[in-house]
Image (cartoon, rainbow over the protein chains, first blue to last red):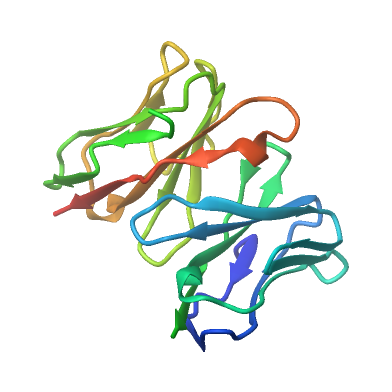
Length: 110
Length: 116
C-alpha cells in the first residue's frame, strides 16, 4: 500500500461547478499537507498547505485535513477552464521531503 | 534566470546508454531535490542535497542512479546503462533552508527521458 492514495480521475466538470479532490494517507506522523497544481509539461507549483487538522481558505480554494480519518481534501469553488490541470496532494515526511499522491487530472469545460 | 532550470528538456537514449541530466537551482537556494515522475503517476522522491552534502538518497532505485552537487549549486543526475523502466520525467526542485522551506520550494519543468 502506498503512503498516499489519490484517485487519478480524470474528473470532468462544467465551468462554475464545485470540485472536490481527495487523498488518504497512512502515516499518522504527517503534520503538513500540501496541494500542488501541475499543468501539462510543467513542474508542480504549490497551491496551498495546511498544518495538522482543520481548514484553510485561499480565494476559491479550500484545503481540509482530518487527521483522525487520515483524509485530505481540496475544494475548488466556481471552477474555471484555467483550473484544468493535475492536482497532487503531498504530505511532508519528517519535515524534509514531500510524499506525493498519484495526482487527479481535472478538466473544466466551458 | 528566475526559476529552476533543467536541461536537456527532452532526452532520447538507447537502452544501455549513460545519460546525465542537469539542474540549475534558484541562486542562493541551499536545498535541492530530485524526483522521478512516471507517466500518470505523482513525483517519487529520489534524493536530496543540502549545499554539496547528499543527505538522503533513499529513493534512488538502483546503483545505476547517481547524483552529485559538487559546489553546492548545479546538480547532475546520472543514470548508467539506461533501461526502459527509467523512462520518466525527472524533476528538480530547490528551496532555501530553515523553517517553512517548503513554502519556497520551486520545481523546474523537468527532463523527459525516453529509453528505447
